[in-house]
Image (tube, rainbow, N blue to C red; front, side):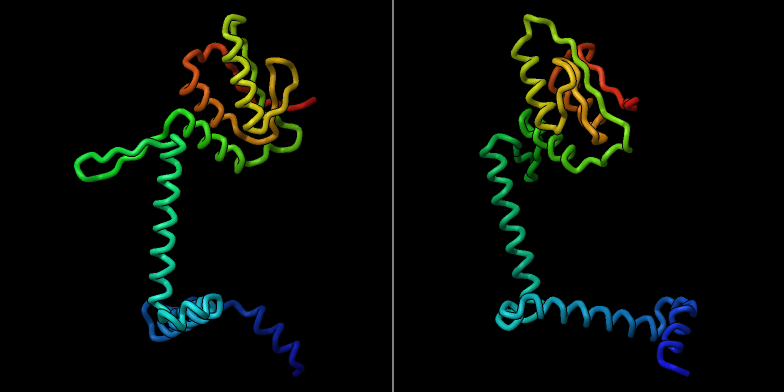
Length: 185
């Protein structure tokens, strides 16, 4: 029997699952942990030599927590979040600009709609609310929409829920906005 025939036979055979908590399954888990440790040690050799394997992991965890605290302070300084200490616990909430940025970040990662479908936003804001109209246009542009008409915008991503949340929270006049999922003809 040639080597490639043996290899093909091994691949085609279905592996039986191991019994949970058996000696074999424990050995398999130990091998997996050793491989993970080896990869970690090879990716961060200086840290592992300096602190040991567990010490290097703890060091990286502490570093990540410190960086997250710095970013929280930065978000608070930029007035995107508000933090309050209530009964010894910190509570965090969005500011208006923070919520807008949150929706923008969600829309960047939104799923694309199937070919030929669009998310349409139409608005009819009174003439005496010109600043609001311009603000809506800026927001839609930031969310990845393109202008079809002065008050009709479209996007190829599925952001309809995000836009609806943003408009209902930011602009109290829901009857000025319509959001559609449409198909191009």
